[in-house]
Amino acid sequence: MVEWAQLAYLKDTQVNISSEFSIIKKYLSGIGASYLNTNGINLAGGDDCAVIAANSKLLISTDTSVVGVHFLKSMPADSIAYRSVAIALSDIAAMGGKPLAFNLSLAMPKFNPDWMKAFKRGLQKISREFKLPLIGGDLVKGPLQISVTVLGRPEKKILQRSNAQSGDILCLSGAVGSGYIGLKEYKRSGELNNKTKPYLFPSAQIDYGRMIASFTSSAIDISDGIIQDLSHLISSSGVGCILDLDKVPVVDKQYVKQCLEFGDDYQLLFTVPPKKLLALQDKLNSCKKKCHTIGVMGGKKLILTNNNGSIKNWDHFQ
Amino acid sequence: MVEWAQLAYLKDTQVNISSEFSIIKKYLSGIGASYLNTNGINLAGGDDCAVIAANSKLLISTDTSVVGVHFLKSMPADSIAYRSVAIALSDIAAMGGKPLAFNLSLAMPKFNPDWMKAFKRGLQKISREFKLPLIGGDLVKGPLQISVTVLGRPEKKILQRSNAQSGDILCLSGAVGSGYIGLKEYKRSGELNNKTKPYLFPSAQIDYGRMIASFTSSAIDISDGIIQDLSHLISSSGVGCILDLDKVPVVDKQYVKQCLEFGDDYQLLFTVPPKKLLALQDKLNSCKKKCHTIGVMGGKKLILTNNNGSIKNWDHFQ
Image (cartoon, rainbow over all chains, first blue to last red; front, side, top):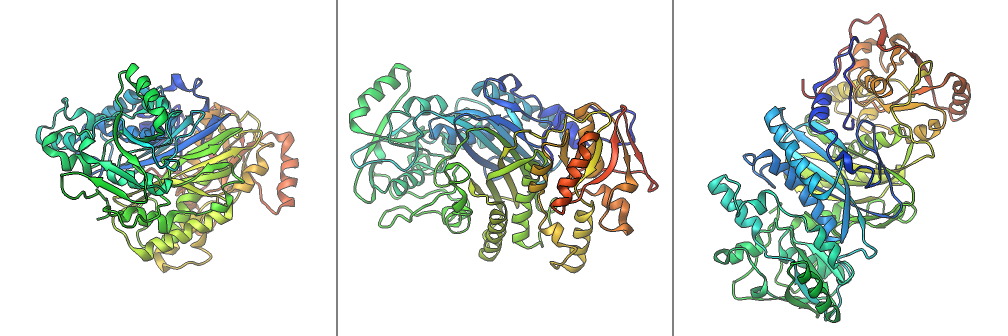
């Protein structure tokens, strides 16, 4: 169909310009425009495609957020916008990359200026935070869904899921459960507070991912829950793991099981060869970042050692 | 969330692998995999991001298709898949580019194996036709929507909307109205036939776009209808146009007005400096492609000369 159009109204013609283009112009154009040059974007918005001057490898990832599945209709539109982009950025973080730009496809059932204004604020917030321009996308009528494609530039070493080795230490960037606890608290209070903030405005671990890239053998984000994402890492790498669940930091100890199985967290799960662990920990500590050692790779199975009963994974289709 | 996972089932573990990943594995993995190397794709599926080895400029465009808005629920799933990708490819065509790969985000309310099988067939069909691998995306639960992001490599000259000059000839690659006539006929017959095929399986004008790139001053596809898209070209270029509507070829002369205003066509509209027109026409003729001259650029207004009454544009939000 059509890209974000930087459309000057045509006056004195016989043609009516549609509201789609005026919405794009008012609410979705120019976001992060000051980062275009630095990030190698030659052309953004207003044409059929955006143009990127890519002189190295590029990372690309797409994530879709659906009302009632990935977020609540009642959530503030700035949060809906912010977290839709953050979730996609998290995949760039998990590859140890630096984000360059994003595309946004927004389907919405009707136009509400206040909602759009807040949505724009959310996009501006995350754009500023990661110095990231919005370079195009699509605006369509339909049930509320946001699909975000992020482009990134990898570090020299691209962090994959598939290179974990037997003997590597399994590490986690931070506590799990902010998705579960944040949503639960938001449903209760409907407020932005310390508990809901990590859910409403989740932090993509971009700096963390870039920092660990040269030390680690594999990494993944834990958006689908730590067990499920660990399963992906294991099967990609062809090596098992013993995970000590009691070592996994959780946001709220009253809800250990839920924190472990809910997902919607954006911490990084990664493996480090033992001889590199201390150097990595020193580096992270010096930047006041944590590194939780929670297991060890080896064998052919995933073995969970814990006292919390069986673990179930969150699955959209069950 | 998660990329297309090439997931080997983990046996003998305590972990259930979710159906999301088995759907991805069965229906959305490996499509166009034989084109990965040629198209510079280092990594596709099964990790957080895909990795592209980009040594030149890249084009990127996203298009979203929504059930009941951009396609009918009753349409065959192979057509839904095919046209969702074709629509995105059309933007690459309009920039004169060669498509390299695509990302697909599929939201669907429930899993139906027959539907998924047909959907996969549609993806394979367009993948083969354009030698295009599917390199990642997202599968989520939600109202049926398909969001496709296409990456492409431009020719030396990137065809933009913004360079039309006064005196340039306005040209069109083929007849308008196959969207309107095809949908109308599909609603009547529910069949794949000569009339519905251009609607169910629209042709992205990739070859055409690459062929005209070095001759033309500007181009756009006419997915939103010829008048609306001409308006974009005019406003981007800052030059008016006289369009002779009677010269615009239409698919069915009984429905001139509808063919002109409905959109959902994927022909290219472009401008050519007069001195290059003959050479371009020769080139196109030698490949049995048409080039309809339908107007001339100039002035500050869009002037429509026609005998068919006033023209209204198709707008999702009206």
